Image (cartoon, rainbow, N blue to C red; front, top):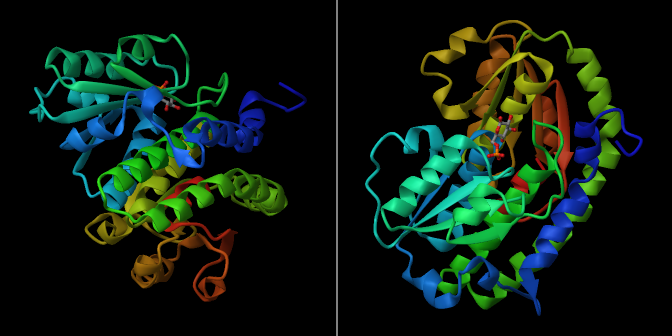
Length: 332
Ligand code: BG6
């Protein structure tokens, strides 16, 4: 365990290294090169639609990828749980690309979904961490995340590298499909390279405050993670981690949807973690946060450094360094 109390802690600390390795592997001469993943420029141009299929945290990385890919490359993306996809007789565009995301490359539903897609003659890409795993062997092409062995069942560093794979694909698709300029492309690549250091800084700088906060909230009974847009994708992963590791009941909600029934569950002391990293959605988020605060929630914000005014609304705030809006999942 490398001196850590348990593997999950070790793997949390390995995130900067895992992310750096995955970023470096996809860059050649200052540009993104997806030829190892079978995605040369001609192929990228020919793809009409993307289907992302996965389970658990890999699915959450897929939800983030959907937002980033549609935003940067303007290509329609559908993201789906493998356990649903495999049994629902999906209608697939023959020009489509099915992307299976899996740390282990062995998750039964994800593997079955891959086989289903292949049987229908659709091009498949595995985003996989374990070399030689079933999904890596059977997919037409593979994008290897370089997280290294992940022992903890609850993923941390592999999820972080899946996000990097998502950004690399989205940025390259955006460039090749002429949705982003050369200047923007270079900016995004430069920012991608800064992520490992930013992740390291968050882990180091915020460690004590997070430990203090966790100790204070350890008896929480229920938690909600809320966000809009890509922050909803982050909320899903935050919520899964919370329940899987602490056994505290937790739900992720699209912040704007909370009022349609579920807000009745928010009462005194319920922990609500709000993720707000997107400028355009900031005010909308604040109004949702005020609604839950009025019902007595203990409100936490995860937001960009500089948004200090959030402290007028919340009980506790965590700040993340500035980055491209599409890359905030890696820091939040
Ligand atoms: C679950 C794990 O059982 O499997 C999750 O608890 C993981 O952490 C999910 O994301 C999917 O696994 P894989 O290996 O297909 O990414």
